[in-house]
Length: 465
Image (cartoon, rainbow, N blue to C red):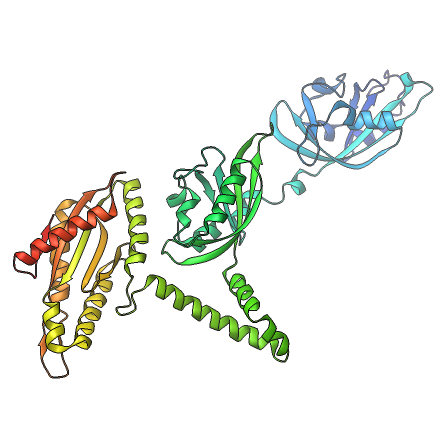
């Protein structure tokens, strides 16, 4: 602004006031070209006087966006709106993106028309404050990472099983509930959380929604890293890019196990609770505890051998498949084992089934102490046990066999008649470098054959297939 600018006051005190104002001030002529910008405006817009003076509002070196990030059309620019409506613009939030930086600068804008005798003598005065810090007060990633809900983001391509959709992000809440680290699941599919009792109809509905790029809400039974079941309520939504293409899916999930159990309890006891209004809250609490105990009991019946209190064959198959999957992914060597208690029929015939059951419990307890949490083992049936463990090399198999034999030899016990029972076992082992063709049933069968060779060779020993 200078003394020769048409239509402007030549009062130097006014120019001094604008130059020292704490807000940005830009004055446009009626054709929107910039006649004046004060120092604050230049600093906020990251422009020099030479870059802005004389430029029209529609100059391609910058563009405006609304609060949702949508690019504004020329008709929606503050200067245009003031001219068209002939009304002041008050406290409108607008984002400015210029060619020097992709970062959006957010401003609270006010504007009005300074009317002259004609359009040539009329001006649009725009004032604005920087509110970028307020708009970016919270980090989206920080919020997602620290929310108590589980957040899973997958790719939108290749959603068909068994390999898709691939996980690209999980938050801390996911790691806490499932026991998996982000490193373990990135590149995997959410199907690794599903198990034998996961409802197929629900998973089919989810799969169809993903193929149709539609949002969906489902309640699903999932399993954590240790195989423990939990109910999850999930909202799955497609994420699109600026071209409207679906690039990812995000699942917001919440552990609703307790809620699920409460609902089932309320359904089954609704009429009784209506008749017993007195002490309703206490009854609900007590019944919920009973239901949780019943759930644990059901899990034990489904997955735990009732005599030995170690995993049963059904649970072993599920866990062993997970061990094989992990070994295939990490190029690990696995040892498949089959164990049979020596002379078990003789012990049963001589001392009775109670003593025989005690032998099985003692062997099971010693095996439970010998294997790691990441190993899979079970009572396979009768006096037989099976296991799958990762080994660092094939040379380690002898150490594994000797260790298990010694563990069992050290667990002899005395009967009520003071007879000492010495327990030994025969072990068959099969060592496999896991590939996509590795089959659990086939590997266990080979280990079983090796166990019979150990029996024929004199028992109390191991043989490698």
